[in-house]
Amino acid sequence: MTEKEAPAKRPKLTLAEFDALPDDGERRELLDGAVLVKPSPEAVRQRAAGQLALQLPATCPEQLEVFFAPFDYRPSDRTCLQPDLMVCRVEDVEDDKVRRPLLLAVEILSPSTRAMDLLKKRRTYEEAGVGSYWIFEPEEAVLTVLELESGRYVERTFKDDEVFEATRPYPMRIVPGELVRRTNRSAVQ
Image (tube, rainbow, N blue to C red; front, top):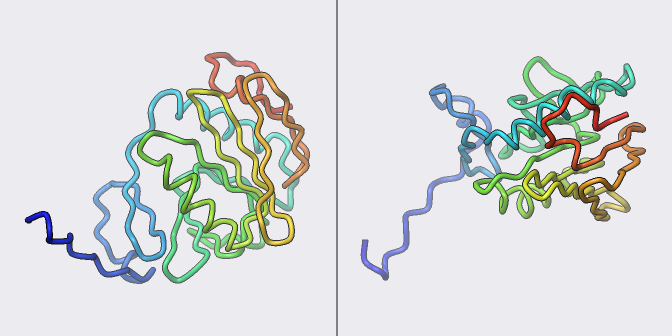
């Protein structure tokens, strides 16, 4: 390809076309019709996801449910996302997906997903009416909390040993630094 040639644009897929792709073991998402392939997570990212996957259910009310990736959130006919963790109403859960707005989506940043999680997914979750979106940066132990207010996200940031006293989607206590420490101590109380 010469400098003047632009790469050919791939057609945007529908959910039906996305679902028909062969299962090759890759973790895929569909965002506005574009297929995204997610790599395996690094140890620090896996540690944070594991801590949250253990701790979010500990305080979850029975009318809500916590899921961790891979589990589909399908807010539109051209979008299928798999947040690292999600919280939704029990009645919104279908066999293999959730279509109604999530109460919480959590993404744990990695170098390969950083821009997508911070920009496109943020916009998508906000437009879809996801009540809270947490973005965790494991290398810096920074939790960015976005909460929907009048259709727009309001942002707060918590670092290291700062305590986030969540009220949405239910009360819990998060200490970002404890999510990445190699310990058995609980970061959510």
